Amino acid sequence: ALAAEEGFDPEDIGDLNADAGPLPVLAIVGRPNVGKSSLVNRIIGRREAVVEDKPGVTRDRVQYEATWNGRRFQIVDTGGWELDVFGLDAMVAAQAEVGIENADAVLFVVDATVGSTDADEALVKLVRKSGKPVVLCANKVDGLSGEADAAMLWSLGLGEPYCVSALHGRGSGDLLDAILAKLPPAPEQRFGGEAVGGPRRVALIGRPNVGKSSLLNKVAKEDRVVVNEVAGTTRDPVDELIELGGKTWKFIDTAGIRRRVHQTAGADFYASLRTAAALEKAEVAVVLIDASETLAEQDTRIISMAVESGRAVVVAYNKWDQIDEERRYYLEREIETDLVQVQWAPRVNVSALTGRHMEKLVPAIETALEGWETRIPTARLNAFLGELVAAHPHPVRGGKQPRILFGTQAGAKPPRFVLFASGFIEAGYRRFVERRLREEFGFVGTPISISVRVRE
Ligand code: GDP
Image (cartoon, rainbow, N blue to C red; front, side, top):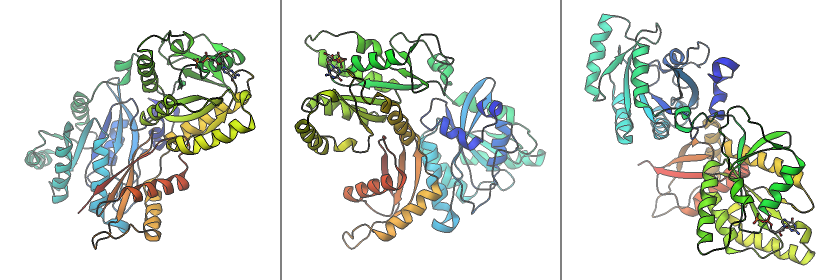
């Protein structure tokens, strides 16, 4: 719907609705030239959306939004490859593998006029291994003889081949019905109408007495609380819409912050559940720390929760009005030693009491969200990895030198990378790669994850 109405470049849609986004995801898998792109065009009803489907063209997994019978879903075309650099098969397989893992269902496209090839069989293995529901599409079935060809595809063991002609549109309705039967419901059905692209969701977290409710009152007072409903949001009495820096933000579970919870036995436990629940609903966490006191174990535990939740993170030091030179010196040491795990997070030094540096909060949140949503094109990532590996090879172990062969970004929010390697990559080298990735591409304010898969 977004694409059709607002004339987006479909490549941008992926950024609005990243892999981890709320729409159900269909991965399209198939060899080059089987007609995946024409099929995608058919499904999304646009002619101009797709680049040419030919081997040797560097292309990323491309994402589109589609609607059928009033149900929205996302299509990820897994056909990215780089023939020249690493060899076609390896890269296709790697991209397809990652695409399949991130999907709710798989559309497997075969060229009925060619029949199943060794490459098709290899892809079938991947799909099977994933355990994802799959729909088999026999494309280029333009007439009766084509249907006989298509019948041969039962041998792939993926069930009934749905005959279509992506070029002429034949059979695409039945195919779409079959696809939707395998996809989970769209978020409208799941969450009661929470729209993608509504206000950004912020969790303000921190141990008791660091100043969460003071900060909330300060920002809500100075910049008018928005009481009326904003289009596309669900009403949730514990969340609050607050206008800050010219934008509306949704602060999660403000009721839990405003209501002073009594310090009874087990309060800690419930506070921690509450923090986890707020993180679950949020996109970005603002972790508030009382700068006037020595960093407590509870502070680092809350930071760990934020990092592990995979949300964007901003660290805000409150009560800065109470900081003298000496405390500042020790605070810097504490940050170096105890907060290494969030070295990458933007940091603001504020005072909820005086209002100091309140205006820096929004830019910090925006920077963190930007890092969180970053997508690195596969070609750029691999150019970077190629240089990195050439300049700093992995140490030789047992006479062998493991090498990173290539990589792909499996998703965003937060950025997740999958690297394919020729052997076991040591933890130290992984950390080195992460550090260099951050130096190269930023990722300010976001955790990133890197997993390595060994190809023999
Ligand atoms: P919460 O439990 O995290 O919501 O913390 P509160 O907002 O209730 O604040 C705890 C105490 O710290 C209160 O007495 C506040 O007045 C005080 N406080 C909060 N922010 C600041 C600040 O920036 N400077 C100073 N000096 N005191 C603050």
